Length: 273
Image 1 (spheres, rainbow, N blue to C red):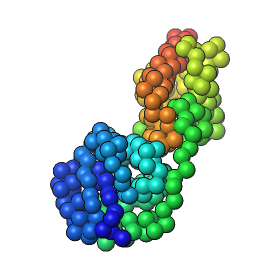
Image 2: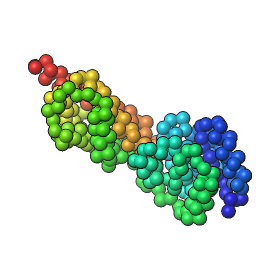
Image 3: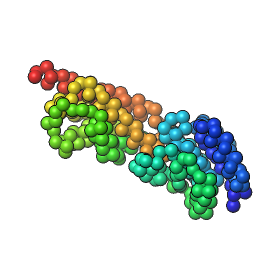
Image 4: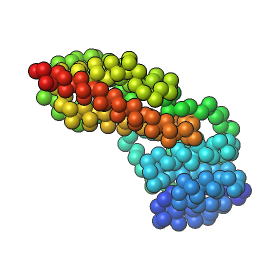
């Protein structure tokens, strides 16, 4: 089987890019190497491949998904394999598993890699491409995941002086904030709606009663952005990459406007105390 199999191998580490392709060639595979997303996309446009093997993080975290997305949309019959150096994060591995044919933990053993390639080739089927989604749609479909991410970050990092909200109240507050943000972005409004302004102000007041300072609100806003970016990264194969930059720009502008409203309401309570 191996003699006719063409593999695209993508990794930004020179040592691995020199060694692993040579080993695969010794097993009879034809291997083309790429050191970046740009080189990989050029190779995908220029020739047909049977297998893609890509590092998960090529220059930036999650870039491997960009290469997989390009391959799936151009060559849907190609088997896609991801190499990752982070075996401890089971939730991340579940996301990887749902988007590629297989993943292997670095450093991957050659017998294991060859066996995975041959097994997937024997059983390969054309990938069914999902309809591309804008960032607001991805956020709207994954609100609970984003909220869980935010609350985990806050519990781990923020040291609150006092807490006057229950866990359920805290979760509902954050979920209302993120849910309305997603709907606002889906509607494509350039300015905050009155409802979103009110939710932002309520959030600032709730955080005041929970013991947050204004700098902590700013830090929390960063958690919001990080959680949403992680959500987008986990769903990158379904994302409309052509609209990714304007969508993220609108997201950050809206989060900044919501933060201003929250800090303003927080400050009013602080001054009145």
